[in-house]
Amino acid sequence: MKATYHKHILEFKQPSGTSRGVLKTKETWFLSIDNDGKRGVGECGILRGLSIDDRPDYEAQLKYTCANIKNGLDVLYAENKAFPSIQTGLEMAFKSIEAEAEFVLFPSSFTKGKDAIDINGLIWMGDKAFMKQQIEDKISSGFSCIKMKIGAIDFQTELNILKGIRQNFRESDIELRVDANGAFAPHEALEKLKLLSDFKLHSIEQPIKAGQFEEMAKLCEQTPLPIALDEELIGVFGTKNKQQLLDTIQPQYIILKPSFIGGFKGSDTWIELAKKQQIGWWITSALESNVGLSAIAQYTYLKHSKLPQGLGTGSLFTNNIISPLQVKNGKLHYNTNTNWEFNF
Image 1: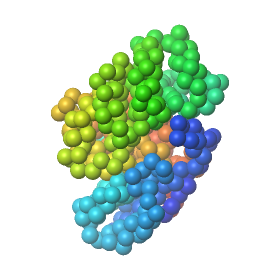
Image 2 (image 1 turned 180 degrees about the horizontal axis):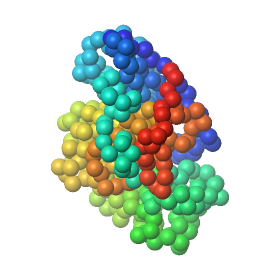
Image 3 (image 1 turned 45 degrees about the vertical axis):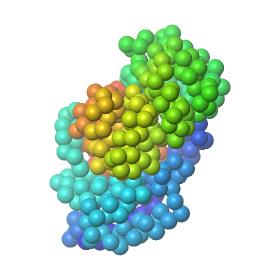
Image 4 (image 1 turned 90 degrees about the vertical axis):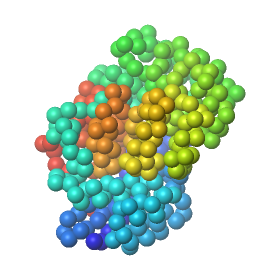
């Protein structure tokens, strides 16, 4: 058994804005395993500036992992505890070796093209006209759930945009989620949540920056609007620490990005803990290529969540991997008539 890795820079079709800045490119790494002529491919989806494993020794760890691939998944997964994106890539690659069909890691009605996954339409930050155009495009494309990034432009402008949506679409027509990416200061967050709640939003992701446990716990207790933890889960290792975080903050929802939290095994742990406390959850991609997105979508389908998932990022890039993934009418489909084109 041998393994290699390859760096790939994904290029956005247009710069995509968040409260942490504008994204033009996205670095990712492919981990390939050769086992007696059978290839397995996984994606190590790091996001610079956000992933806990954004470290100077990242490539060195990938090199070490490939050199020791004969040690197997269990050993290497444990050795990469501090590198959740590499853990995810390893899980994908080893599952890929076992797959009967290329890149079909979790066979289901989804991978057979017989069922689809409800997803939210993602609205990136920009000026008012740009954001309104994105919203109109998503609604006309059949999305019934829209997620809007907020926190980078004037807050009143963002409120006006949400007001405009609600003047045309009732809560039963369009589900609205907002993602602040930690943009609000703790002292102003509750007042902003009250203003946002006027528009009957489903939830807000990460209103204040991660790591402020007492402030976030107080917000979750007092909020008029359900709060979903996102960045808060990054870098929380071990079941005990995960349990402690949920006990302390008691959020309404958690959002799982496998590449940030230890892959499928890490996601399973969070889901089990959340269910015990009746905390809702959904799964979101972290700007992976279609290789990682497909694996995450296949895993997600088997979890049978009734909420729209955050898996609509495949069309963002000019140089993505050609795959069977297809978005139609607000759902992610696996088109069995389209073949993979992976040339690395």
